[in-house]
Image 1: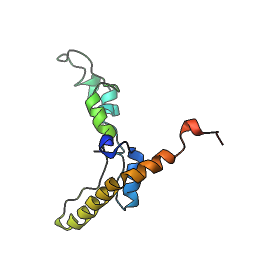
Image 2 (image 1 turned 90 degrees about the vertical axis):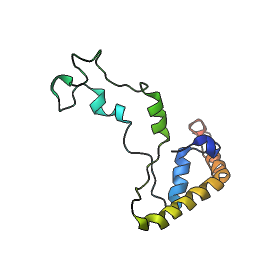
Image 3 (image 1 turned 45 degrees about the vertical axis):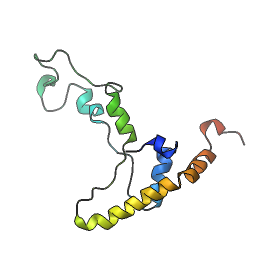
Image 4 (image 1 turned 135 degrees about the vertical axis):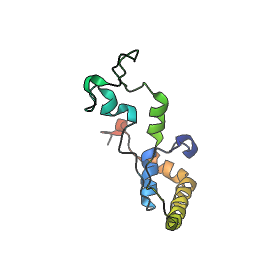
Length: 128
């Protein structure tokens, strides 16, 4: 989970790029928060007829989730990072390499922030 405030404002994109430069397999998750998947966006889940179980005589209302309905989940997802799963005792060396890379990027965050601040912004476009 990326904590921007612990990285003194370093953007997640630069953070991920720096970790990749250290050889880590890391990315932002390729999926959406569960409540934003099509299954929860429509009443047609392709399995149950008539929108069951979200449209049922036992439910008080039809539930279709929208962006903003689960702000804590959405905030968590916005900070999530995807790493490989390490499950074998032989993975200890790789885990130590990951730990070293995270530490190195953290210790060099000031340089990364300077780099980030040197990048042109959209408002800089056309000012040549």
